[in-house]
Image 1: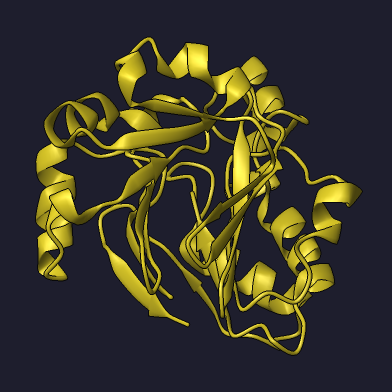
Image 2: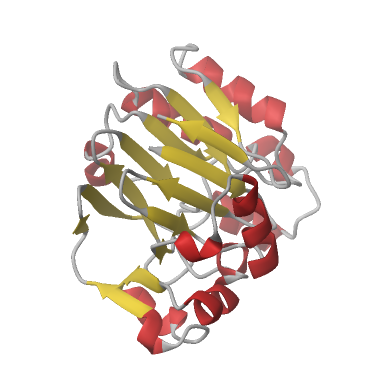
Length: 249
């Protein structure tokens, strides 16, 4: 597997997963032209994407979706309860409803993990072929049931959105602060670290922190918090808003 994070943060999120047989774009938070430009750095044509997966329909995850589907005619795989929301911006002909939490395409197994965020039917994903990847963003918490599926994977790409102290002392309106720390909000650095401490195992090779808030977090703080909680057992990196990064597993 190769993972290319095109960028991640408050202003846009998108990741390309490359397996032996498929190229899958997770979220389309950047314009068509920017997405195309970043992929071309890796000698990948945007037309080579096989299909799209969405975590949810907030703008920082779908800003370029309408343009990309219109220009490439690629299908968007979404949970059945997300179809109505996505159909507001994407032609129904290009929406593929997923009626099960498990999807097998060639040698790749995709498990949909139902997350907790203030959007219609938000999800994360577990990808498994000869390697394994957990991809979780935009959730207020992870249930015990979901955690049971996520142990000892090769790569974890997980939200580490905010530092609670920075958030509560910051300039956001009070109701926005309460939303962020609530069950339908975002994972804090400490929450991400505690989940990862429980999940990582002998097969885990790396952790990438994503969706760091530009106002309520610092890269150094997120890395320090998570590394401390997992006792530096696994390398931890942070994705950035305006820089792409590639990971091989």
